[in-house]
Amino acid sequence: MRSVKVYEETWPLHSPFVISRGSRNEARVVVVELEEDGVKAVGECTPYPRYGESEASVIGQIMAHLTRLENRLSRDELQTLMPAGAARNAVDCALWDLEARRQNKSLTEYAGSILPSVVITAQTVVIGTPEQMAASAAALVEKGATLLKIKLDDHLISERLVAIRTAAPDATLIVDANEAWHSEGLAARCQLLADLGVSMLEQPLPVAEDEALSNFIHPLPICADESCHTRADLPGLVGRYEMVNIKLDKTGGLTEALALAEEASALGFGLMLGCMICTSRAIGAALPLAGHVRFADLDGPTWLAVDVEPALQFTPGQLHLSTS
Image 1 (tube, rainbow, N blue to C red):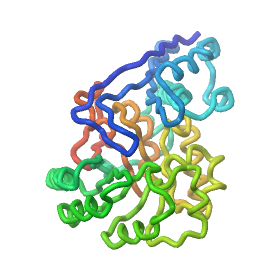
Image 2 (image 1 turned 180 degrees about the horizontal axis):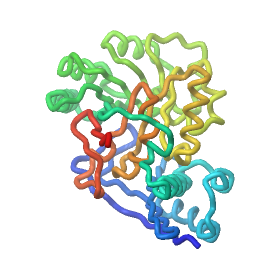
Image 3 (image 1 turned 90 degrees about the vertical axis):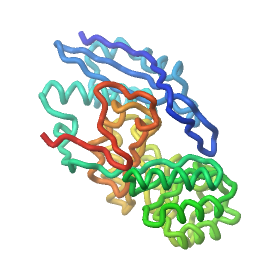
């Protein structure tokens, strides 16, 4: 038998995280702990209301399969037992962790991945006044960040971006609208971004409006986030997006994330690796993908007032990994 524990945690943030959908002051995660033959393992997910998830619904989804989990359910069996989403992610990552620990290997080593000692990660600039966002960008760059992810809603686009580019003239900028824009005026906004040297635009339109991107001429890559969860979404993205943002909470774990990365690359999509607001546990589970992406956006734990122990080592714009 395998022992299984499922519980939620709340982690206060050091400052509000503001995107087009609203603001949050804490991270609420669900944790799965497994113990089998004296080996302990853990997985974490962040339920996301945008996808109809809550802590209660995710815990309920996992507990519905408790008996099978206790009876040593495998990762392969899990893929068909539970749908993609946060609940499956927590279980899948716990099973990966268990397998790696049984082999006395790190997760990245067990998954056959090779990582540099330092992973460059985006640092998020959340929505505020142009002056606030420019000050945040300048402070991050001064501390060492080189890649900034700019959150925007549908207002003050040019004012915010011009202020940020002036404050951080040499930084690589990527912009995330979180579905807040619409097709009207999109071409002009894309040109503005290109003129300001923005390297990529993430999910400008609501998922239901993706068709507007078909045959849409644009001067910078557009990346699918909310529009891309698993491999099943890829056919509908061809000709509309140039990149996909892979997040374990969307794919339902590392198993599908690795398969998505391989298939998306084969179709010519560029890759981004993202995260929710989470602890270092969730970032550690995603690391096998970090060496295969154009942009890594793994700053979730840097928003926490206190991270889980042991925590990954972050400095602004960088995730430091042991190579031993």
